[in-house]
Image (cartoon, rainbow, N blue to C red):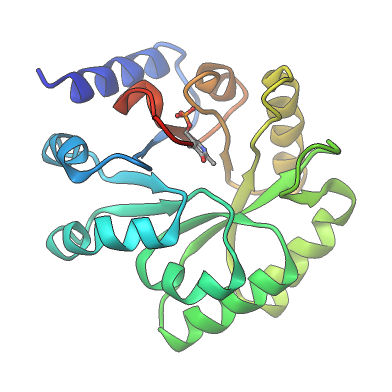
Length: 218
Ligand SMILES: *Cc1c(COP(=O)(O)O)cnc(C)c1O
């Protein structure tokens, strides 16, 4: 079997061996990898893919998305509001909603383009080093703003734990926050820690290098 498909299947098995209560969606994060690497996974029937740069994603995915309407594309990286229009055109999910200006732009463009995406609010769990994410203290107000005033379909919370820290405590806190807000989904877990994330109820894991191999650039 193709190595990439093989690695993907092994990850699926590891996740299902944890017997998660809610179905877990694996987002194959294909940033920096060309379609040569991705196509075997598409042929295998996988539908969820992630990218972190809008321009790269447009160049790579415009073709495959036209051919296969079932493909779901996830923007997992930092999104500048001046790229919101292109992002709304291409993506199905955006995981990194973390400021009002961006929420305003996304709302405007999805209305103009007559599209309705699924969104996650990226949360910053009180870590000074993290530049992205809504602080917990502002989360409820920001959520209400996105949903009630901007008509964004927020399906859950997203976290990127700081590299140097133990991820599990962040997953636990995010899961609790998610529950207190009665949100259905969490976007947490990457190659190094997806099993811990699934143990804490993650429904969208974002896995790159464990599927595609190591990247030369971030
Ligand atoms: C690159 C990236 C991932 C995947 O990282 P791996 O460690 O390669 O699995 C997940 N989430 C975000 C936001 C990323 O930028």
